[in-house]
Length: 384
Image (cartoon, rainbow, N blue to C red; front, side, top):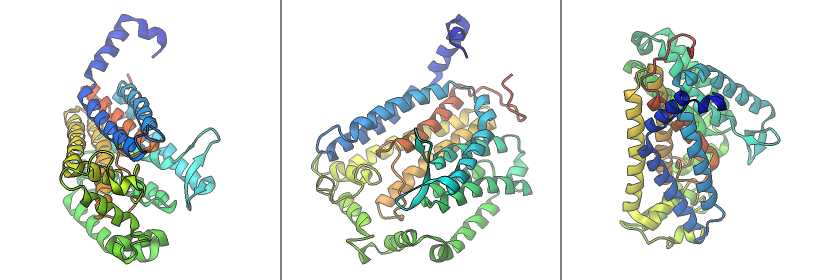
């Protein structure tokens, strides 16, 4: 759409209608979660906006504007771009294997001079769009059980293997879980689901012993027995549990958390910010934030439900699944119910990359809401 087109009454009125269809209550919930994160960053920085809280709020503001802009994009455009985005993401993951930057022992980044980024973040969006498009034109019987299911399995498996090899186990898990969730939502047979779960459970022990890197294997062993190395590999989990337990019902008070304020708790503003919240605001504070997350997930899934196109339903549900898995994995990690895999709490934790990915996903969710009555062709996704 050109600038001159925006000045024409018809186009301008259409844009106003689209903006009015945007779910501003949903946006408010996201802002409340991001605001809670900034509040905790301000606290752990010694009541200072620097170095985390101010940047966190600025990034959220920019991402919020981006989310609204993406919501205005016609759903058929997302459909047309689904395979290209997935293909570009896959090519960039292959490029990481060849020329990627190595940082802290992991080869995850591509440095283009002016910008350095992780292509795995693009794949979190690409896998949702590509699978939603693949299933859009498929019959219910084929989606339930057929040889065609090898195609989405390969679409999920290729990026998962590439990301796991970097190594980035947390992101590989997110891509696999999101892809699996879309297959289930598309109507995958429960017999196949049971067979997959059984195969994964059987494969876990040999994977831990022979496939994982040494530091990943150590994380699993530490998860099973963190007290075996309390000052080394078990330090993160033990300090997180101390922070969680010491908060009690109402917490120690804002800015009064000993584990975070005295720097006993590692990664207090990123991966373990939920433990910081628990220490200062207690059980009540944690439940309040979790209610916000639950409300976001519920509203996003409701958007998926009201979409008139199968592509829209799966795209919105897949983006929501990614967000939900972030919350579940980080929450389990902080409570010692899962190994430490470097998955942050979305919007609450400090970090621009994950925030950008999440907000792009929610931009797509809101696009589904705004264009929920749009009919998406099962062919090439024509905009006509």
